[in-house]
Length: 218
Image (tube, rainbow, N blue to C red; front, side, top):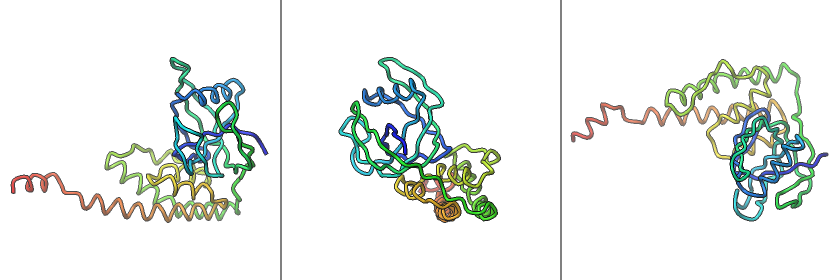
């Protein structure tokens, strides 16, 4: 068990993936100053109810991800831009308010690792769907991606794949809560198959430039 400062957000962080934050509220400026001075991680938790900023502390989901700061840009008025990378899943056992921000006692939740050949086989089935999804988004100028740089480790890969999905935070929270590697990969693949079909249909339904010009003449 460990104690972590907790940052309730309207986003889900996965192990090994980045998050960029602009820190401006006094309570979170104090929280991040503490993390910087003590070289300690903090926890990112999806908000279950409440608001992200300028209000009472929100109620978070109980499962989140710890994060380690990798970049800090200090601005005026003690504001800062920070980049952090997700490290480990955790479950909140208890929480309290300290210096106006949330602290929690947490237990870490490492994924249950099945035999490596099962994970590799599950990743192999997911690979083409991620590649196709990213090609569609890249062709539509919605993201820039370099598929060749995706990680080879199955668990690193599936968390990055979950991070790349353009889907609601609630769905991503469900993925974060999954504790079994092959089951998580299968769940992510199911979502990718649906998203690829949806995006393909939307793009096919968009009128071409010539069709737009013809319509404007009628």
